[in-house]
Image (cartoon, one colour):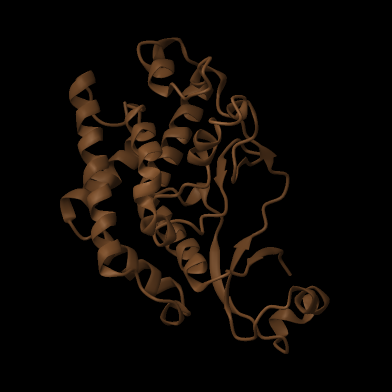
Length: 264
């Protein structure tokens, strides 16, 4: 009786990336920002699809394909990069916006700030290029792109940022990471304020050296259709750990720089 968004991938790795990104968000404690997800199989005669037969026929989806179901979230609104983060040349300057002036920010502004750093951190770890990085790339022909809504990012009625459409994460994004890290890495290094809980999770995964194992254990435990999609390949598992190590090093650098514990 509930509503869901159904994603059919052009190839299975898109559904795999969407699912893996969701479970990584849970591992990092960021599930508030990523809608709940489950996998399903396209079965035109199945009871689960009875109410959408007309739409299913029009979509021409292949019978038996694995698709993702994400909870439908009503009343979402578009999100624009915060004004203090936008410089005249259109690039992001989050460190300049945060550095030295946090005492003058309201609690609501600080809460919003760490939501944005959660987003930047998450997209770096998953190598997702289809959100802020996409906007940065578009600056070369659209100097006002930062004044427009950010791709695949919305805000819920309660104020939480919602990270939508994560199909590029951890699989396709990792295959083309070399192309996009020239945007993702500087964006990450431009922020030095992190939510304490998020920073703590990152440092735990860095020290444990078992991020991919923990991710797949969580995925396998909660998703009955886990065996129907490929697991995270070994090179991608190693890349996830390297990106966590890079992020942990940056968080510790910020801690030393400000003489405070991560997250403050």
